Image 1 (tube, rainbow, N blue to C red):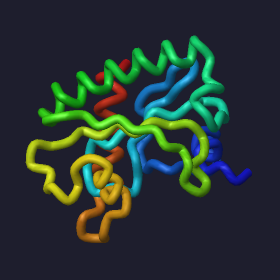
Image 2 (image 1 turned 30 degrees about the horizontal axis):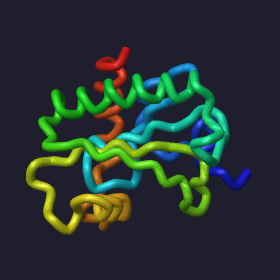
Image 3 (image 1 turned 90 degrees about the vertical axis):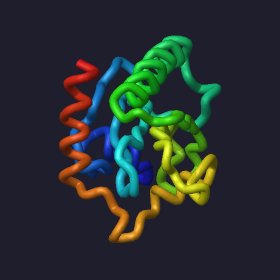
Image 4 (image 1 turned 60 degrees about the vertical axis):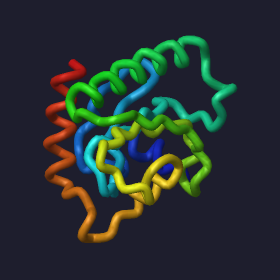
Length: 146
């Protein structure tokens, strides 16, 4: 299977070093990895689909619910200035529908604002968030979303 998201969903090849943060009927929440910022979440469809028009009304309803919960919690827990939300699902091995939800800190440098924030998914060794920090974040957020 060429879909790395499906491999991660099944547990065959996990992307995030942390545990799944939240599991719904149609979606799950993971922490992005590798990444240069804590609080970059990914809402991933449980089944394989590659286009938004393929989602069911029930999938859209649960998606809206989890997006609302996550953006509020990111603001409350991390004090972020804004929350970015994006769905492209076109990178090699990542055509599977997923949404990035990024807590944009108040002090984020201009070079990473807006669409340029995706550069944070290609961190240098020095800027990489340690797997242990992501694990701790995920475990804490599992409790918040339980």
